[in-house]
Length: 88
Image (cartoon, rainbow, N blue to C red):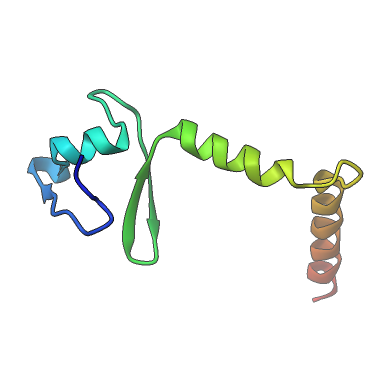
């Protein structure tokens, strides 16, 4: 298996299609027909499988203490923003 820690050149095909080499697709576990999520990140394009995103989010939020409510915190932040906006 190739080492893809170094840049690999891919090409931009017709209609803006990105052509990824077979060896890189194999290394990433990308198969024909896979749905990928694309996002721009500081001048670069990131492609990843939705399952990887879900796994990363699960790991991130697994560290939130059980007695902490992110929903309550978000509601409190929005209410505070609303109060500030009303005062302007």
